[in-house]
Image (cartoon, rainbow, N blue to C red):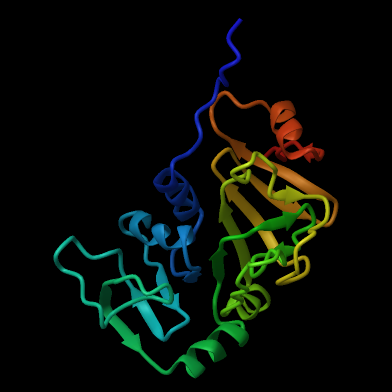
Length: 221
């Protein structure tokens, strides 16, 4: 009997497309360093989404075509980006004022751990040799109207990053509303995890076994 899983993990681009699908028209959005930056390449055609970067850009577009990079125009992760018509540059102090002042609708961040009730740990593992890098994550986590996390569900050693309680230093408490992963999309609620969707072929019971926590079924529309 085959032990191969019946489901296929989302690729990084498929995951970015899944996140982009849920961003509403007219939203002001910050994309965190790493995997979340890919979301900029998958905003649905005809949908106006204003992308913000904490180093002082509003109105970022997708990544430039190869050979058209301008390394004076970069995001917070030092990756070359494009600027859409009407885009602007400003001092990073103004950028942080936007973040802290509640002017962003959504931020999409990576994470080391997320608890079932939405606690976020994404700036340090607290392990020897680890280099803490909080950046603007704390400002975004408490300042954005919604905080979403985009990450692989498991570590390289197969341990779930979605946990009952974070063991790493916290970035924010009860701030994460949605977790987008390579296997499923989950909502964080005061009562725990709620299923939004899974990849084809993955049953809720199997997902619960992977995460090690109960997951409430999706609410009927």
